Amino acid sequence: MRLLNSFPAPVRPKRPGLFLIRAPPAPPQQAAMAFKLVHAKYDRETERAYVELRDEDEDGGDVLVVAIFSYRTTSRLSKAQIEQDIVRKARHMMKRAAGSI
Image (cartoon, rainbow, N blue to C red):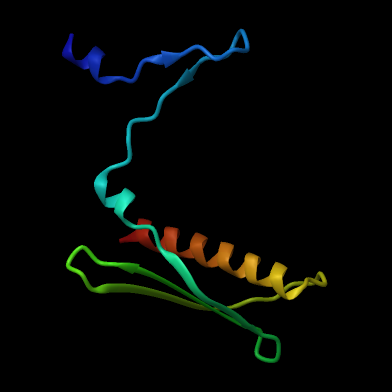
C-alpha cells in the first residue's frame, strides 16, 4: 500500500480525454545548479565557438564550465542567432557530458 501512495496523483485538465501526471520535485542537486551565461563568442575565421557558463558552488566558490567547439552553418544567421545557436549546442553537449560521468 505504501508503494501506491508514492506515485503522484493524476490531474484532470480542463480538456476532456487528457490526463496529466505531476512530476515529483527536482532533487536539490539539480535545483541548485542554474548556470548563467557569461560569454558566447564565435570566430568566423577559425569557425570556433566559445561558451562560458558560471554558477556558485555550495562551498561559496565558483563553478566555471567552458565549451570550445567547431561550429559551421550553411545558413546566413545574424550575430544574435549565432549566439543563441551556439549556447543551445553548448548546453546540449554539457548535458551529454554530465550523463557520461
